[in-house]
Image 1 (cartoon, one colour):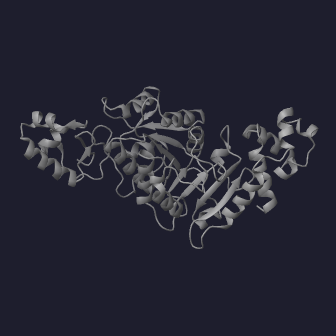
Image 2 (tube, rainbow, N blue to C red; image 1 turned 180 degrees about the vertical axis):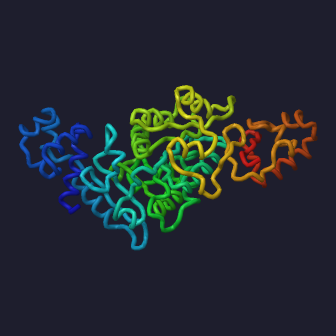
Length: 392
């Protein structure tokens, strides 16, 4: 879009009291935003309230600065690095999946590979949201990574929110399987800030990797800080872009359940991985399953429900390893071959309880646990606890 058109779109998004629904009515009646701002207050009142019409006839505070900042941001992408663009409701590149939802954003700010942004950045029907706890168990984070890696290997773009925990693990799993010259993004991170900021800062390197092989997406103007109300609101974009939403771990009161509810309202599939009855992070998933979400034990379960082929995908997890875990292959030692793993089970357990279960002395048990930890079969948790991982 040209400079004047950009300014008109930004002015429409900043008009106080004029939300997405009113803006869409105006666009449907008058066309592009420039035409809206050429109308009289009386003409505007055929679509919106008197207060909204008055707001549209006044220049919003901060509009000129945002206009200039946004133009500089669009022009400031480094040569050879990720490109930047803005996709509007009137753009052919706007994702059809979002257009079909109740509240599509007026604008989407995008950062990603130039070859993706130049054509169709969003896969039409090949996206899956993977969401979950910001404080997952070690197994939960591993499940998010392995499921996402396998599902991207099967041709799905993984959508999540760049949060700590499950979101980050899902993005990383997709990136692990990503090809450098892929025609679709490996993963899409829908954020709750302006794209000139990364939140949380711990995920700065991850955001850079996503920009190189996937998409960073926001509906919020540049400079928008991490405001609490923005994160639940952006969840409708995560679910709206996707054919389905996979919840890996979630407490009963969590943003992941908000995303799942939005997915249901948008007519999307909802999947949930079951977990330990003793883990608070599993209770949200169990609640979703009771409400009709599909119980998922392997990536194959997701692909079958979405009617996507999976038989030719190398390394696709096919069998559960208990408690909702995912196996990478069939060579991992089973509990019958390792008494420590058998005693540990799949719930977090302390050293004293393991001593009681195994009959081993604490020093010998510590050595065995260290060996299993180095093999990737056991994770050491805060509070002196240990948890078995799916590959064990």
